[in-house]
Amino acid sequence: LGTEGYLAPESFRRDHVLDGRADQYSLGVVFFELLARRPPYQEIGETAGLANMPARRTPPDVRAYRPEVDAETAAILMRMLDDDPGRRYADMVALVQALALVQEAPSAQRSPEAVPGEGLDIRVRPTTPY
Image (tube, rainbow, N blue to C red; front, side, top):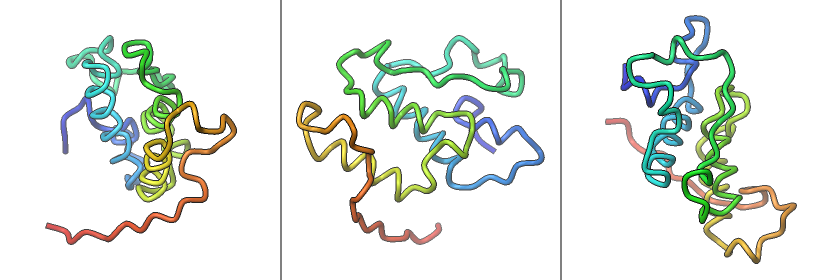
């Protein structure tokens, strides 16, 4: 199935069908670890199990550990780590678009009203399953 700390919370619910948004959560954990040098929910612990976690957690802000991370990147990461799949990006294309927008301009040049990824036309080629 996967490593517990990287599984989206919906993976533990029998009544939920998994989709690409579960992959966004897992990728968000990896991104968080790369930036913060620690897992997002380290206080839960490996043995506690995600099945025993609170029903709804607030995603951690990576800037608590790495204040130099810009607000837009932190917002994308928090959205990826949201416990509710409906609050994550609709699909990976939308996530890639949001990341591309953040990469496109330095933080000081971005409009505070800009929605990451909105209005970009990024083509993502489908991959062949292995």
